[in-house]
Length: 94
Image (cartoon, rainbow, N blue to C red; front, side):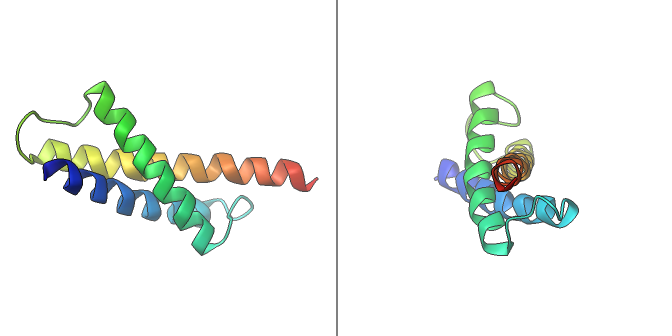
């Protein structure tokens, strides 16, 4: 059950991170819906990557470090993937 909670936190944080990155980088923004979708994907990937590296996770139970790690991993992963996709879109538009 703890894993499901961590994944949900990562996905929501990813959506927020994708939209925050889109707001900060207007030229790379994909629009609210696509920023959210790409952010959700990036949040899941970023959170899982940090989990695999053992960053911000605790063994047994939901701890504050696990929640903070999920938020940071999801938010940063969502923002980074949105920026990458935005750069690719911009490159193909030329």
